[in-house]
Image 1: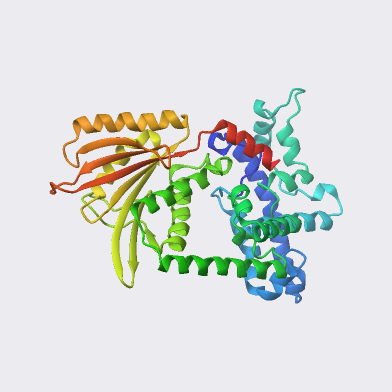
Image 2: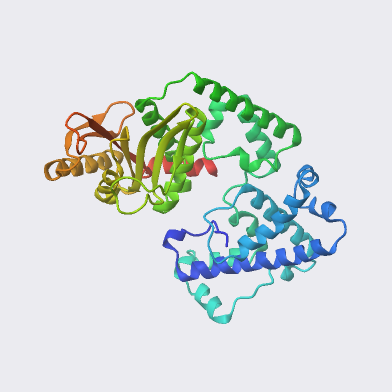
Length: 415
């Protein structure tokens, strides 16, 4: 199922899910009719060009045909998708337009019918009523025209929007990365006009080659890795509206994917997960990241990164030190903050570390201090077990997803 831009699904009620299911079932009917027609026609490619860019259909006809089945599978699934990729949004929007043209009678547009019990629940939901007593949610989902809006997070997949985004990227990449950091243009490749698609791919290849050339002459340092982690988290914080309601594992996936991209391109470092390592009983879990270097002339373990929500900091910390050993250069905790100001979150971590310094004997904390650049990082220095000479640093980051002012600005920018 796809989410509707009508509800906060972190606080969803039974009626919200009933409404969501109703909309998805209507879309399912449209897709089933379309796919049946698609399978019957002998002019498959010509028919698909009504729904997908012609150049893409001609270039990748088999892949294009699969998109229809994949979209139906996605809609038909009982698992709610956090978002859908632009290629599916593009196809879904085209399906809605086609369906509207196909149906002569307005009553035929929405063919799925709610049972009486579900309909009564939706009608009586107080939160769906406006000041005049009208049920605005029920009115929206039973009006086909509204499907063009609440089924989509944004309309960046429109041809004009894609052309504008790609042109901006090609003309001024720093500007694009600053204001559209949440947009991955690779997701829009099938929608791009051929000329812009070729220019975009050439530009990306050029950037990749330049980055690899720089890597060959660059020595990796602990401080550089810390700066890259900080940059990754800052990029995620710019997408606060998009990711603040995701759960711990989903956000950890975002962190992992961001670091994987940065480290692979900038330093040829590897990021892995679920690696059996250290003194911990269990394997590295889904919220842990193992950073290491593995090139033709060097093999080096750099760090373990542990991600958890801020309130679980002590569990996160204990788990991290269970993994670390003499082979690593340093450790990292990333605390996901959703409820405190950044200063309160940093102070929360500092107090926890002070308490641990007093009580912990193994991997003993010998120093706690705040990092100056980048800011809002706390460093704790530790004596390594079995070594009287060597110490190890752990860097404690905060991924700050509690920023009401930035959220308001981002929401306005999307309107």
